[in-house]
Length: 74
Image (cartoon, rainbow, N blue to C red):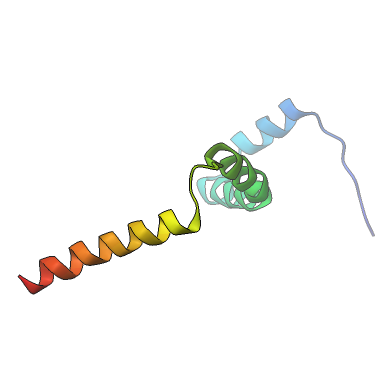
């Protein structure tokens, strides 16, 4: 048997405010999981750049590796 209950947003907030801390944590985790793709896409759009290419990234990685290995050898 499926049941549906229609409540507005303020009623939902009121119900959540009555929940205990563990239930609220579970709600937060559920919302984070549900909204992750949206948040990730927004983040990726924010950091998108055409200024970097694979050669630049490789050069930077090699430079960091060189500094790390150079510091260990001294």
